[in-house]
Length: 77
Image (cartoon, rainbow, N blue to C red; front, side, top):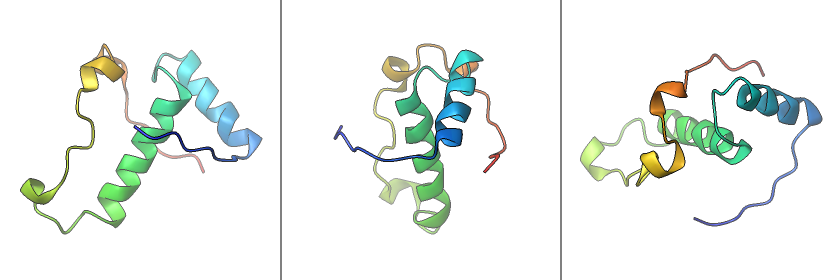
């Protein structure tokens, strides 16, 4: 993975921290990765066949030990 530095409004960071404190995500990085993945799936890769796509998460069990903890939410912003 590559490191990317971004600036976010404080309200976004507070929202991410709330999701983490509710044990919905393990870290800010994971919240951002999932949000970007979902955006790319919808906006960029929606017309591609699954076999043509690169894997989005190679080893999810190493990123999120318990996938049951991740609960899809509706975006607030």
